[in-house]
Image (cartoon, rainbow, N blue to C red; front, side, top):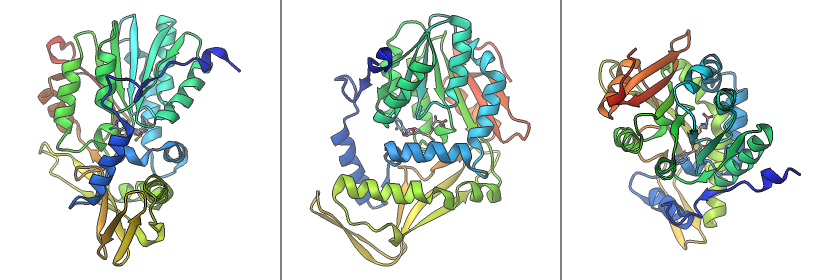
Length: 347
Ligand SMILES: C[S@@+](CC[C@H](N)C(=O)[O-])C[C@H]1O[C@@H](n2cnc3c(N)ncnc32)[C@H](O)[C@@H]1O
């Protein structure tokens, strides 16, 4: 056994300065589930099992192509991205999961600098610790310091470090943040960065209803219905039956010349009127026929932008577009944002 790997330092929910506290977060799930518009926070779908299933699906699916689109762009431009920050650099990966595409950036930074620190940030704490140990075994010169917790806690935690920061938000995860919170979140991120830092986001731009309905189709049922219901039953002693809930995909198309992106909306709906009992909470939850449980607080599960909308969002958040790399199909891009006062390039 690699002794370095077993000594991997961890921060996050054990860190007194973090706002992430699992019992509080679990109570938040109960609040969401019992609110008038029943929903679960998106992070709750990604326990260790959910994260494993998701990683396997996004890499092997023939119809969900985001992972491959982003991988191909990063493979071509990892050196360009690494060149955006000077040494000593800190790489922070928001919603890192397995960091499978991040490996390309890690390799480019190591080639350039020989060593640096990597901070994966994700609520799936055990999962990123396991993946972090593997990364540390795979790359000499890499120090991995996983942060188990919420996005903004991870940003604040990392902002205090010295050295230029390269902040990644891959997998079009920005599109999973509620459309009501995206601007505020980007403004908060901007406030934590300084001139030398860069914020690199992967963004899905596909608005073709047919390919989206295939991409977000039945292949997600084992993860977003079955695993979610198993987790709810385990955490709260529930008797939810997954066969009594139907998985639904909808696509809401907004005008391409407006600020609001189009988005995918995913939900489960109750097949018939039913009562679910959560033994650990002493709570009964009644569902009407067709009543929905949405994923995430906002209306969107996954936003689909165009470049004009992205640029506008960046500018309103205090960022300038430093570089943008799109694929040939024009349906995925990786965008590099710089704090606006150090604007160097514009695409
Ligand atoms: C769509 S996956 C993206 C994974 C990876 N970045 C990629 O591109 O393949 C989103 C990840 O974000 C994490 N996540 C979701 N909401 C979060 C939150 N509010 N704070 C921290 N992590 C969160 C999930 O646990 C999950 O691993």
